[in-house]
Length: 228
Image (cartoon, rainbow, N blue to C red; front, top):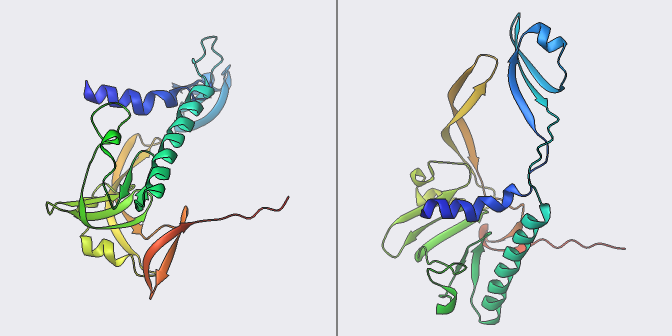
């Protein structure tokens, strides 16, 4: 029930923003393809007389979508996080990193912000040493000597040593990781697992890193000056 509730809270609101476009994926022969009464999107030739196609369908049954619902939920979430960040700024609590629904600070949040009730924060970790390298890319050692490592798009993050993660604080540094990725081949009807390269480097697409002596020590937001 906990998993179902979490999926409903995290995923359901996004369903209200789905495009009201319905498609169908079917196998057809050459005759059916030439006489298809559908809006064809793509086709893959499997053999001389077999095709796998994707097409739009005109169905009177439309999805029950409402972009306003998902937009409002996203906006209220950002407003809530902004209030928490403002509280931290007004009470000299340093924010090291924040995401859609989480933040890392140098001091505990007040008791009324933390708990098990809906809308409250949950204390996940207390780090004694940690590095933040970009959105959803961080690693650290907890006060219980547990190693936590998160790397977006890389499933085997726990296998990356902490010292390697810290080395990325050096300006211009990066290193390559190997991981398995699944590749689909609809023409051959199979899935191939291949070793792929994952280049890990600090990202600056949301905040600009500040270096001192060639070591990243902080970051600041980008400022865009517009002239009207």
